[in-house]
Length: 366
Image (cartoon, rainbow, N blue to C red; front, side, top):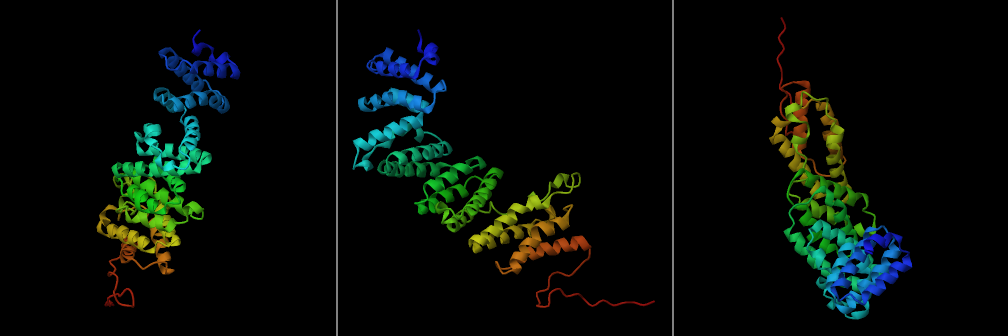
């Protein structure tokens, strides 16, 4: 009778007996085929973790001792965490005192072929398992993983919002290596291919770092902020194109400028709060210089009052409170909006201390 037809009817003891009895014949094609079926059925049949470990562990141990890699690879592909747990126990005994000499590629070559996102997930899961079993072996694994990660970082150009959790996991797991985080990981993430998903990733990454900055793993949050902003190449600037859909601006309901502008105001506010003053000032200067240059794109906004209230006022208030240097372009944008609202041909900003200067007007009395 085929193993696949009887697995669900076996008791745990019978499964284990079947596994143990099959090991003696693993070198034969029949034995290899039977054991592969056992692994497939155990992993696919919904057995609990204890049953899975009890049955898979003897097979993996046999593979490690005998050096029979085809079956090890099959087990690793089906249940990697279970296999890694057994592998670490084996390596801890074999390389006690010389863990640095472990050739991880021999055992974990499959994960090196994955794209960086999936490699990061594997690193996270394996790192926790290995550290719990043997810290010395984990240290060797971590050093090897850093080399692989650097190679993947050098070739990775596309980062998207879906990578956020993986990046945060890497930051937390490798928090002891601040130099790698600030000078390798974050610059590569920030300088990736520019698209809307990438900008959203950077903004949310900064928000998360700020929100959890008091965690020990994020104690260098200020340096992380500076690294991301300095390598973002303007991706964090607020584009006038995002204010309103220009082609449909007069066909849709009044836009919610609080929702549209809120993330940018929050970003600049948190930059200051964390101490990244220079970076915050640069974002503001570049943003509003672009607003002035491309005023034709946004000057006809449906709700100029909302724009002043939700974007300009909060930033001017921060400037007035002395949180950073005043940005002339920001005041120029405000003036453009005021002119639009009151529809007067007011003179431009005066450079004199007295502020705006109005020309003397001659009144004619009839």
